[in-house]
Image 1 (cartoon, each protein chain N blue to C red):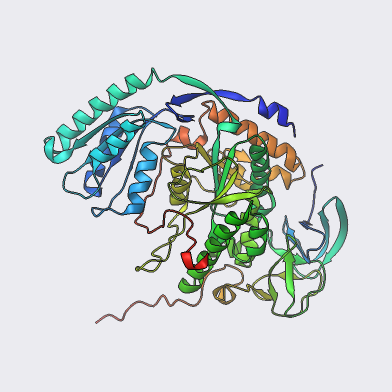
Image 2 (image 1 turned 45 degrees about the vertical axis):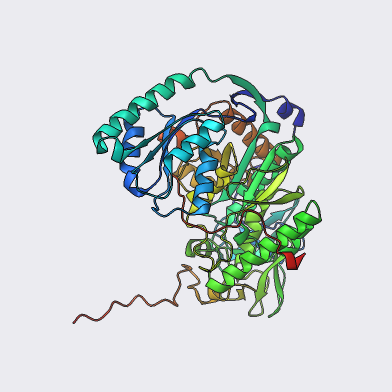
Length: 407
Length: 117
């Protein structure tokens, strides 16, 4: 593979003060309770622009995890402006979200439905505000970006036997190249590393990373044991995967071969460049773990909350989902799935298994495609309007905790 | 070059199983991986995406794929046999051994409705 060609690849990003530049320039309409979600969706819909989208948190009672998620998303590199929409009586505060976005140099405003004449008048004022924001975003300064500036997230969903033979392996090769160019690849799904503790620890960049990885692995295994549920589904078994260990090896392939710098928690921006593991599973708490990752969108959202400019979703069986805030590049290692869902799949890594392309060629092609997405080319999910998101109640400690007594 | 016909891919040379890239009917198939290829015999039909043994695996021995253990054999396995839930199990996940071997559907949760009054 030709790293030189990659090194020179550059595109124009959107400058965000001192923060990381973005590859998109979006207006985010954020609701702070389910009761405000209809108004928020109508505002975004009636604004009639593909760069306007909705996220939100449905709970009335706030939750530290959810607040951190919202804060990280309203200050995400791809977001240029924020309109927070509240009902008025909920715990989660719209005005605080707008303040935070403003502090990071974003256009920001908030709107309380109870104080703005209810549904119709709130929608009217919201649409007006969003249109004003879109006008202002036209003047966002542009700045050159390359792979060294890029944070990329990867997870898999709907895995089959091709995921571990082609899809994730190609992403792993791409991750190795991205790391060599000084970029920041992030992978997740520690619950799909069951049986691989030794391999995980061998990859630790230093002693601290080793302790974080060991703690995170043990926690995930405790979780799986106590709920008697491993991250493997009937579809996986029918497709030929027999054990969680087998699925785990396939999933772990997407991390490539570089040293792992440490463990990120949701909404934590990587403290240094290089390869990171995102732990998005809940930490033990008085409610005892709660639910783990409820669906693929929630996992993508957690990656994006760490500042990922875009994410890669590797799917053998096929998944059509996209995400708010950051483009999702859908990669399949299954050529048949690519053919069946060609309107949704961005990248066919299955040619490797057909004997029509080598892993290196395919990873290089993936890198080029990702470079073009960074430069503004819309993914199939973006073209189709996929902007799913999921922010649940969850309990997470802020860092991969090493308890004092454990050293 | 594009490969034709029934075939299976072996990820590392130390693996005792390979993955069927096509349905492999009972009989000859092409085994390849790591630049090597040879013809082998399948003792039974292997569904696409499933594993076929390429070496004997004794009961209680590890099943090796990707060069690591992905579980242990629950019966003696001969080369050419289909390797799945009926002859191996996870060393972690005890529930998966009770699933239907063809569909993967769990049989341990009853779906009975409450009786009508």
